[in-house]
Amino acid sequence: MEVGTDATSPLQGGSSSKEKQRFKAFVLGGPGSGKGTQCAKIVETYGLTHLSAGDLLRNEISSNSENGSMILELIKVGKIVPSEVTVKLIQNAINSTNNHKFLIDGFPRTEENRLAYERIIGEDPNLVLFFDCPEEVMMDRILHRNEGRVDDNDETVKTRLKVFKELSLPVIHHYSEKGILHTINAVGTEDEIFKKVRAVFSAYEPMLR
Ligand SMILES: Nc1ncnc2c1ncn2[C@@H]1O[C@H](COP(=O)(O)OP(=O)(O)OP(=O)(O)O)[C@@H](O)[C@H]1O
Ligand SMILES: O=c1ccn([C@@H]2O[C@H](COP(=O)(O)O)[C@@H](O)[C@H]2O)c(=O)[nH]1
Ligand SMILES: [Mg+2]
View 1 (cartoon, rainbow, N blue to C red):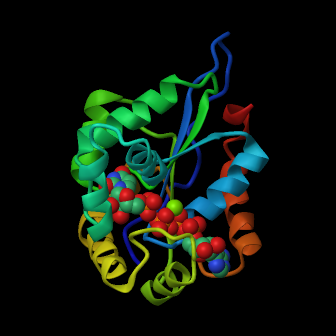
View 2: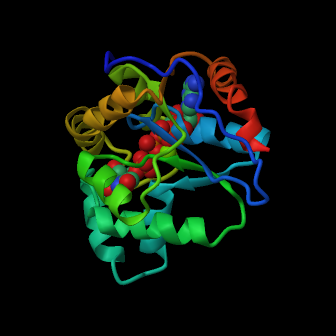
């Protein structure tokens, strides 16, 4: 899926001051492209805190929070939850850990999400990973996931794929234009894909200590 050009070299960083600089990577890709699977491997190797926007929203449903039923109705049909709700959950999660390095998985989903994040939290990510995966592979992976997700059914997956193409690809294009996008071909075994992920992260190692 052609969305633009990729980053050629990482931003320089490091922790010369006493306070470690915050490091954030956004992890984007269509439904079932393998974001969560690769995030688990990144966490294990580099010690980042994994914040999956979808998991944060599902936690709101299972804890019967004020917004829980509204979130459930949107997730069931594959639609996007209002930006302020998701950004606040991400902000609270960031503020509730001492770690300085984060993986934000499955967010921002739309240009409106991105702008809300910039308005409320305000720091651009250091890098953006995009798992580029053919639709038929994503569909097959989701329909075999067997985790009992309310949105892992044929009809909702079709909507999620449509939402991804129409609303999420422009976000990916934005980060390509900014020169911080790293596109990874998400077809192959988990280990083959992680090898490519490591090649990206190794260039940022000074910031990940
Ligand atoms: N490289 C791979 N090869 C085969 N199956 C994979 C691969 N990576 C992940 N999977 C499987 O595909 C399914 C979807 O993967 P995962 O949950 O990581 O995707 P995701 O991008 O987080 O999806 P979603 O956006 O729906 O949360 C899971 O069952 C996972 O075990
Ligand atoms: O920023 C976000 C992230 C997710 N959603 C909703 O949750 C589901 C599932 O997300 P996964 O990342 O696949 O776990 C997604 O289809 C949306 O309905 C959201 O609204 N905003
Ligand atoms: Mg996921």
